[in-house]
Length: 274
Ligand SMILES: NC(=O)C1=CN([C@@H]2O[C@H](COP(=O)(O)OP(=O)(O)OC[C@H]3O[C@@H](n4cnc5c(N)ncnc54)[C@H](OP(=O)(O)O)[C@@H]3O)[C@@H](O)[C@H]2O)C=CC1
Ligand SMILES: O=C1CO[C@H](CO)[C@@H](O)[C@@H]1O
Image (cartoon, rainbow, N blue to C red; front, side):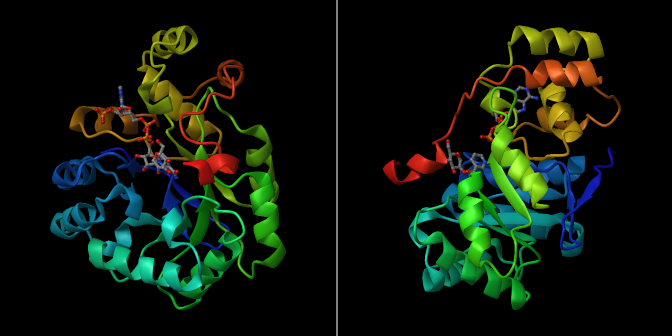
């Protein structure tokens, strides 16, 4: 079984650098999806209250028999639940659905203007109370992080952002690195929108790997945490088999050069229009 390397966050918590995302996995399928990933060796699952599948994620984890402390589970507070009290309530709802007494990482899903600093205070309380092992954010640009850091007592450990070869978010990534905030890539495969890209296909041939594996390896070598989603056992295994080869510095640069600012999700400054 592939051993997934651990990455240590600035607060000392370790996270498997590769995990499984479960966005758009319907509630009726998520039990099977998570169960097969855990069997394959995944130990890190990324969900959110917005995905409406926390119930099945929790059940698959319980039934797996894997000790809770061997797993890394992330969930997120959604846009409608910002604010101190609402966030604390949303957290309890997530915990009930997951049937857990703590999560490893709790994230603010999007930086809703004005109110996200209040939401952060609730996350700080959850951290201090030991209800979460680490707290972080998602979809924060460098200016959102700057605002957050002005008031924060505890810095986020992670910023989970849309990141793939056609969207490399240089400025935000640099800001995170300067502030010791780990970068986590969502839609790391570009949601399978350009798996037929000529550059990636050429590299796949060169390394005798699939395009998905080339993309995941690119994230790993950039030291990003990466959470590709697949409901299929065969692809889950394929996506994990990325620790037996290395992209050359030239090939890393070539993939970096594919950046064209192509976004799959919303721009974080336009989230209120969603
Ligand atoms: N914080 C945020 O705002 C966001 C967080 N996320 C998180 O990031 C995770 C990953 O992002 P996501 O948007 O799902 O997109 P991904 O980039 O992970 O791509 C998923 C798509 O790729 C397909 N796929 C997976 N592996 C392979 C493979 N080896 N070969 C070919 N196709 C493959 C999947 O199909 P199939 O399942 O059929 O295999 C699915 O269609 C999410 O599931 C979620 O947990 C995502 C979006 C926003
Ligand atoms: O987590 C998420 C899943 O993807 C969506 C985009 O398609 C995002 O808006 C959302 O934040």
